[in-house]
Length: 287
Length: 143
Image (tube, rainbow over all chains, first blue to last red; front, side, top):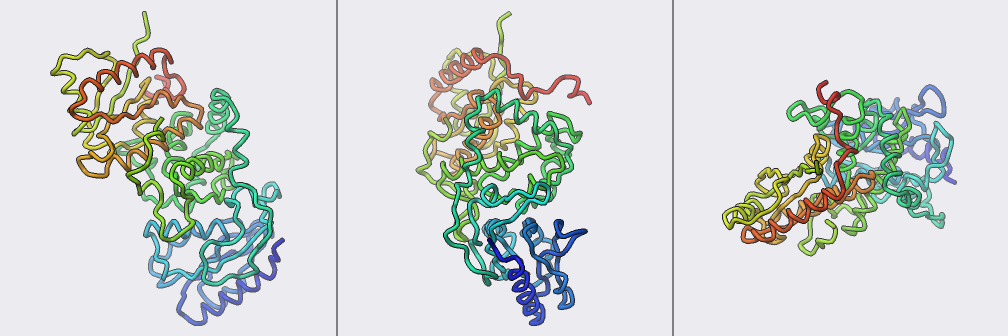
């Protein structure tokens, strides 16, 4: 289990050093919310802010969500767990941010918990990873020898369902959607402005939270995140009605990995699979 | 009355649409259930087109493009191939019927293939019956 207190101290120490050097005007980390279990995303902008930084097992937010909010900052330091670092890699691949403008404070973490259920989320939504894939400074011991579960293991039950049952399941889930767009807000990859669902010309779907519009919104969002979703699971945790969106994203990620042989956000020099192609891709994938 | 499906065909300007033209000029017969929309390239096809078509009452969607390597824009259909493969997987995992969505590479000289694909696909959709899962109720559509 990770020593969260030690990581918090290291995070404060590094944040202080960076802010004092004046090279980095913003450090993205976490702060206390209304209680221990509900930390908030936090941008430390001065040495005085550093004291407010916290890190505990409930700090699930994918901070990569926030890096594009500081277009004027010369450099941004960011606390990144395994999934967050993959999100950063995708954003770098998509040229939304430059690698040299980031100071990635890597956090190896196991034992992260969902504040709603207090369940461990490790094997469910971190893509089976505990250590960040890309970092400048590592804030704790690299985690070795942890039992790794395939990130796609949770899909087995749903893949085994027959088609009608699966349709009933997804229709039931997606009909619950109240279209608050919390999934979109929580997602580090959802940066389009405007989002297709907010467009009026063409108007892709109804804005009312009814079945057809919900279907259109979610199916298209699954598609837009194909080959880019890094499996942080924030969409499902942000969802107020508890739709397990991560399952669908995981399935699409799995298919992409099988078809194109590459998982999202693992290497800086890769390209997201849908903006890339190979002449020798098989036509069988269309069958 | 027997079920006559509505099938949306999205055809690329340079190959499949010209192939369809050839099928016409050579007086080949194929079912009239296909409504063809011409796009400049198969990579012009936004996956939302396909979901939307099903919502607006299409029973099947047929996408036609140039053979890989023959794209008028060199690489368009290679991107489209990956993209539409993902669309298919999404339809499958949502529990929809991926058989209702088909992608075929048909060149400008393959009028025969065009007629044959449309005949086959129409027969297949007829067998599957009307597409109900995504179709929007008319009442909702008016709102």
